[in-house]
Length: 142
Image (cartoon, rainbow, N blue to C red; front, side, top):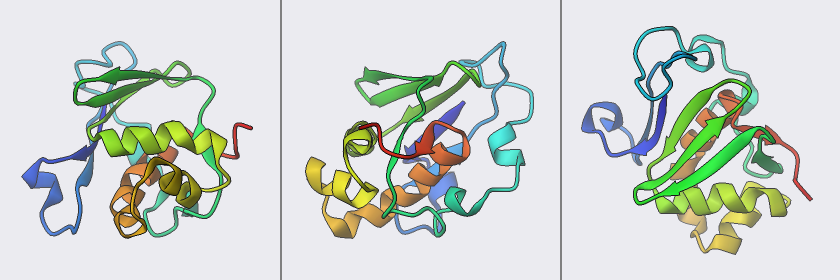
């Protein structure tokens, strides 16, 4: 189970923006978040999976097996292939993720949803975590 852009002070200490915290999940108990190693956090991240290496000028989209369920706090993302659940804890992140498929880059999607360019850096870590967990994949959905 993942929480993205959480306001948890334990995970955001020393960071300029909201932290992306990762909680382990098991395929049989996605909502419980107990037990098992999280493959996305255990695997060595590639260049597109680290906040500094996550390219905001590339096209990204939700994986075709990911379903988005809007909630009062943001949204739940469920990947039917990996059986992983992620929480989007901020409406701005949800709007950005939903706009990715129809834009040529993360920056263009941010402009389209009204996120100031100065704020984009604070979303970069959460987007990198989503990419590392296969919730986001490179390429546009057009």
